[in-house]
Length: 136
Image (cartoon, rainbow, N blue to C red; front, side):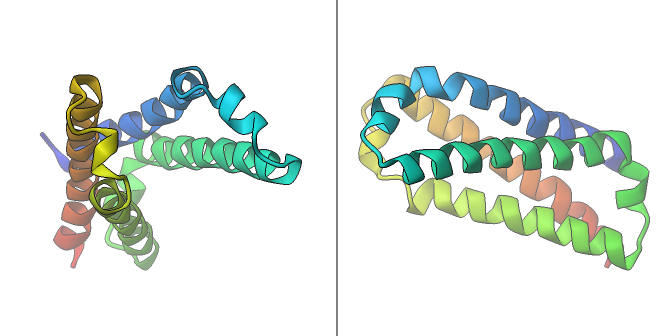
């Protein structure tokens, strides 16, 4: 696959992640969980979730709609690629070092999800870091 195609696919993956956030409230019972928080913490949580989705859609849209801009070896493209590679690298690290293993070990669905997300983060890191490396 060409770098342009990988960028477009990475963008679609990020947009899909944003859409999947729509299922999180029901799956994780956020209504009950958030009711226990103070008003300010509940609203911060909701606003942050919305903005995470917005960032995913915008980053995805950039990769889907303007991959050529990211493939041109310019200071801006290297900065964006480096930012995306750093973002997804940290997300990969957090997948293994922040989430408690008790959340997924011994639970078939959660373990499968943990592994699948690890592969998604690895793919996104590979795309953005790989293209950045080619530019350097």
